[in-house]
Amino acid sequence: MARSSYALAAAAVLFVLPFCHGRGTNDQVNNPNIPYGSFNNPSTYVRPKWRYWIPDASVDPAGVANDVAEAAAQGAGGMELFGYYLYGGTNPAYPAYVPTDWAVYGWGTDVWKTNIQDTAVQAVNANNMIIDFALGVGFGGAGVPSQYDDVNLERDIQPFYVNVPVGGSFNGTLPGWGTGPLISASTGLVISGGVGNAASVLSTSSLTEVTHQVNAQGQISLSFPNATGTHYILAAFYLIFTHQREQVGPLDINSNTFPAKAGVPQSQPASFRNNGSNVWDHFTVGGAQVAINYWNKYLFTGTTGKLLKKVGNYVWEDSIEFFPRYAWWTTELPKVFQQEHGYSINKYLPIIVRGRVGFVNSVTVPLYSTDQADAGLSHLEDYRQTVLHIVQYPIQCGY
Image (cartoon, rainbow, N blue to C red; front, side):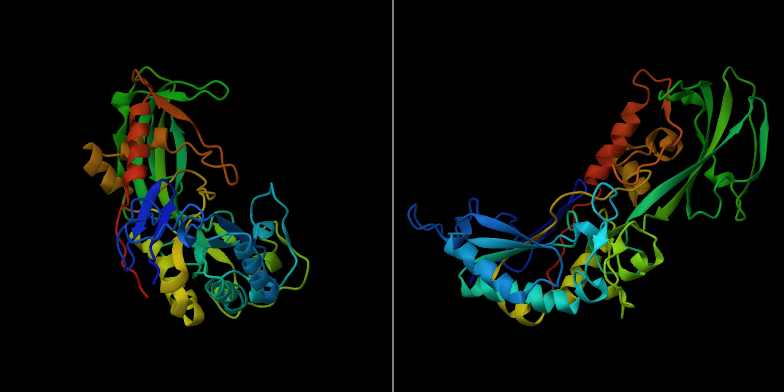
């Protein structure tokens, strides 16, 4: 009986899924339970493995079985099954054309499981191989079907700014009020304006968090002293969902919300399982659980479930190809930041939320630095270190 262990590595964080046979995440290094075979006859576990990228679930199952058998005949020890679906993605750099009905042939649907996944698992078993699964669909596998309003989907932080004259005041509604839950509000004195792409410089000593002064209706009253500078800023930051789609669905395509265009008519989805995949929050256990729950309920069942402990090797995320618009964020980040660095991140958010996070959904926001010797980069580095360390939780297997 082969050993099964699964790992999810994502967004500079690591979820180690210590499934039922141990806590290691590499079954091929220093593991006495793995038979290595000999140089002339290496075991399945140390033979080369093939990445097997499927365009969508309309692929002929007989062709899948034949491909697996051909790989085995060429000496491969295993396959990685990956539903690519790239041609329907949201990245404008790639073709956006959907040639099949994704309400039927989308990743994670019943047809995907039966025609592609189960067929591949059966073929791997018949050819004495092992199989890896990409954790989700699309570019790197960062999304699975889920309810659109699931609280564990990817989050972002959206900034709003208003300028106030030196010696002036602000009495009114916080900028951006109603966008989402308020993370923080802060003020600062701009002592020199940015030129071109350069950052405007904030007086470090002037940075002040004023979140506690915002009332339940979003109103705030502030008076700003006379000082040497160009103006003050009042900044507000809100928690939002990115609603990023790793695979667009029929409702997206039919509504022209995304650049993907239908080459064939798209059926009305029977449930969220037939309407594409959403990126989950990669910085929380709840986010990881969105993916785990989907696999346990819909994919690690039937044929796959029966053969999993024999031929299953890894479930993993391929690469990090999803991006927030403004900054990597999650609900618990301020709390973890305080614990790790001994001060609040909130008043420094104007120099941390910089936009231009990725190459797909980047946005331009006002760019600020401080008058510290390092221009405030130490705070930005503390933020990045927190993002790196924010999650390292073991998660129990479900099969």
